[in-house]
Length: 247
Image 1: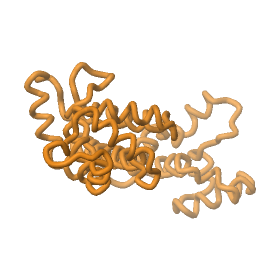
Image 2: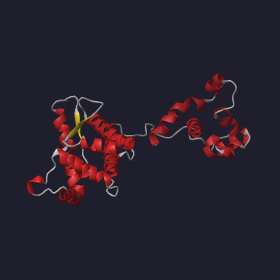
Image 3: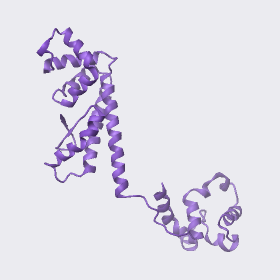
């Protein structure tokens, strides 16, 4: 019930029902680790995502080409999960095909020859849209695994506010800069003096004694002077880090 992943020598089982997948994928991981002890869970999840991405990409590439779709599906004959999918989704259709082939009793089983005939009939019947169902399930599994990866990454690297305590006024100025406050149209249309006046109100600071000495002079023609002179400029990196941790 497995298909070989192009990016690895190990085999990743392919499921065609997300509930079956959720029930067994961790059991599969345990089994695969017996011969790949260094494989961790994140790596396994990435292999799963690549496997279903490749399946989804193959279906997209085929794009209504019945011959190529039949060839792809016939390659899944030995995949027990695919056989289960066929019976789950197309039980009545398969029995109808058996009837048309004149099969009764023990003859009503999917030998490879009969399997091929079943696939041809299902693909020919556009109402069943077999490739669309598989693509949908593949996308569901990819999304589920991506969410599982996010959970693990969040547990390993939880986002924390690394800054403790109150921000000084120079740091507040730097923070206003990194959130784009000075790029707002209303600010851009004001003179530098008016901008300083607004900032002084926000920070409860004296415009001349504080704002002129500390605000970011983005129009400075001397970057070295700006870096050395304006205290707020020196806090840009720290404020960017705080903002990133909030997102």
